[in-house]
Amino acid sequence: MKPSTLALTISVGLFACASEEPAPDDSGICEIGKCDTLPFADQLKGREDPISKFLRGLHDSKVIDDKGVFHGSKAGAIAPTDDPQFYGKLLDGLATVQGCNKNATIAYALADDLISGNSDQIYPRLISTVCSDTEAVTNAFVATLGEVAPDIDVNRLEFFAWDPTAQKYSFYATEDLGDGNLQIEVDPARCSKCHTTPLATDPVGMPRLPIMNELTKPWTHWAAGEGGVSESFLVPASLEGMPTWEKYKKTIGAASRLEKAIRDANALKITPARGKQLFRPAKLPEVMGLIRPLFCDEQVNYATELATGEIATDVFVSGGTKGAFRAIQSTWPYAWFNNDNVSLPPTADAAQRVFMVPVRGVADQTFEAQLTSALSPAHVLALRALDYKKPVFSDARCQLWKDALEKFADAPPALTGRNRDAIKVVFEEIMKLGGMSTRNLAAGKFIALDDATPAKLEALKKAVAAGTVPTTCGAGGFCEVDAAGFGGLLETYVSGITRNQTLTERDRRVCKVHEEVPAAGDHQQHQESGPFISNDPSFIRLDGANPSGISTIPASCQ
Image 1 (tube, rainbow, N blue to C red):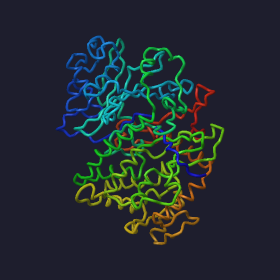
Image 2: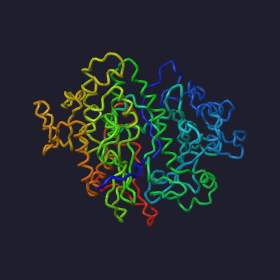
Image 3: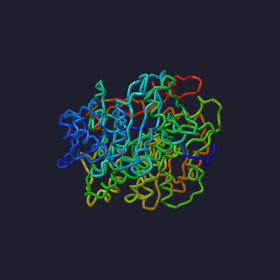
Image 4: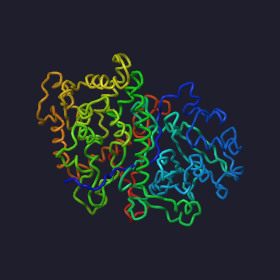
C-alpha cells in the first residue's frame, strides 16, 4: 500500500453540544438548560451574538412574546416580507445585524437516515451560513431538524452563533407549535445532551463545538456541489417540485466550502478562546480540561475511501502526529509524513471499500497545536506513540487521564504560576501515575507501543519500573525511540497494512461509537448511560442501486 498525494479524505454531521463551566455570576447570562424559566428578555440578557441580537429585535417588536413564542401572524413586517417562515427571516436577519451581503447566504445539504430513524428512508437536512463571502461566515450556523414531510420542514431548527464578548458559541433551538408559531429555546437542555466529549469522558472545561462529521472529500452524505461527485447522497424524488425545497435548493453550495467554515471556526474562534485559559492562574480542573485532548478523543471525524483506493493518512496515523514532527524539523523522509492520503489496492466492490471510519477530530488536532507553547514535541509524540496502531479510541491513552482525574481528587499535584506552567507538571504526573516513563523526554526520547493489549501494557510497566525498556522494538511491541525511530515504526506499519486489516480496525471503531457506556462527570446530569458518541453520524451507504441504503454497522457491534 503506497501513500497518495491527493487531498485528505476525512468525514464529518454538523451539530454537537458539550458542557462547559457556568457563566460567572456577574455575566448576566443564564446557564445552559435553565433559561426557559425566565422571561424571554432575561433569557437573552448579556448575550452579544448575532442570533441574540436578531431575536431581541423580534421581542421588542412583539413578534416574540415574553414566553419566547414566535408568532407568525405578527411577523408580516419582518423581512423578507414575502416569506412567512421563521427560517427565512432568521437568515435575512443574521445578514442584516452583521451588515453582510444578503446574497451571500449558502445552504448545504446533508441526506441520511438520522431524521427518519429508518434506513429505508433517506431524507435531507439543510445547514445554512450567512456572510459566506467574508470571515464572518463562522459567526452563525443554522440547521433544519424537521421531521420527514412532503416538503422539507424548516420549522424545527438548531442554530448557534459566536458571542465575541463571552468568547463562545451560544446555542438556540425551535419547536413547532403549529399555526406558524414556534417556541424559541435559548441554550436548551436538549442541546447540552449531545456533549462533544464521549459520554464516558468527563467534559470538565469543554467548550461547545461546531462539528461537521464528514469533514473532507468525499464529504459522505453531503451534496458535493456542481461538478462534484456526491458520496451516498440522495434526495427523495418526492421532494422535487415542493416549494420550500425548491427555494433553498437554489442556494445549495459545495460541501467543501462548509468544510473550510468549520475548520476556520475551530482555528479562529474555539481554539484561541480556549487557549486563553492557559494564561489564567493555575487551577487543576482547568488544566485537566486543557490537557484532555492529548489523551482522550474529545471529537471525531469520519473518513471514507475514494473509488480510486485513496483514503486519509489520518486513518492510520493519529491526526496531529505530523504537526509534532514538523515542530522538530520541517522535512522527514517518510511517505506517511509527506502525503495526505494513503492508497489501498482499488476494489470494484463498494462493500469492500472503507466507509465512514472514525478518525481523530479536527478540533482536537487544532487545539493540540495550541499546547506546544507548554509542551515539547516529545511530550506530544509520547502519547501519539502509545498504542499507535489505534490512532483513535485508544482506551489505554484515555484511561491514563481518567485514572489521574480520579486520583487527583484525593491527592492533587501542587501547581504554581499559570495554567500554562502547570500543563507540563500535570502531564508528567499523569504519565507517572499510569506507570509510563517520562525520564528521557527532555532528550527527545519516549516509549512507543504498537498495540496496548493488557499483556503488553503490563510488560511495559514492569520494564519501566525496572529500567529495562529496550531500544529496539521486538516481540514485546514496545521500545524507547526518538522521533526518527518512531517515524520509522509508523512507516513500516502504514506501508504494510492490508485492506482486510483496515476493515477490521474500521469495524472496531464503529462499534466503539455505538458502545453503551456509563456517563461520566457532568454528563450524568443528563443521562446515566448511552452510546459512547452522542452525536454519532449515519453509517448508511448508498450504492446507486438501492435507494433505501445499506447499513454498514458491523453485526459484531450487537
